[in-house]
Image (tube, rainbow, N blue to C red; front, side, top):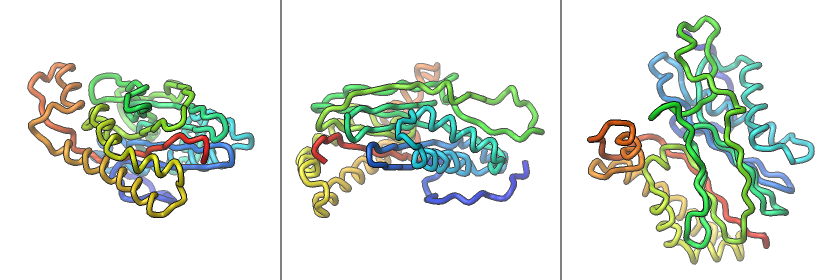
Length: 275
């Protein structure tokens, strides 16, 4: 393959193959993550170009939605359509997960395609975990762009945005939502995430009461850093049966053990009607 010139990618940071965006209007906040499929490296394609372009498009569409009621699934569909039509991305594919959180009603809408997921925690319990979509183990549903001349097109996963699972949840005060790529969820069991959240109950309480206090915000930032550290440490643990290893065993690789070393990107939100 001979990829065309790399498109400009506003907001791109070094997150491996992962990408993310955040958009906020007067009435809601929209969050999203995407995980570029790493197999494209073998064809000389940077997987991050697709995922970042998709997320940047999502941010543009979310910001420009006139009535702020565009469902995350529709944002994803329009973002992918824009990516395809502009033809700035030569080739690539990624998973995606978007959340739209209303600032007035507490309702959260979601759209998830592939194995990027989200988790809702309430009262130190997992209230909901989104379902992963896979064609088979380690082959998640994914949005894809292929060069017109590319051979063996039928051998690729060419999923449409319409396959994204759409959800709706009524959040309550103090609910915590974790949104992440598979690099996080492949290594961290939900119960481990809850355990970390319990360690920061006082920081979260203070944040809900005064989110503009810089010292309190720093405490919540430490929560994010701790979750990142936990994911990295567990990914490097080659003696533990990680969620990824458990999935591999279920698929027939009975002796699989250890974590899955990959970039992990996540975001979290705290529901609070008083902010």
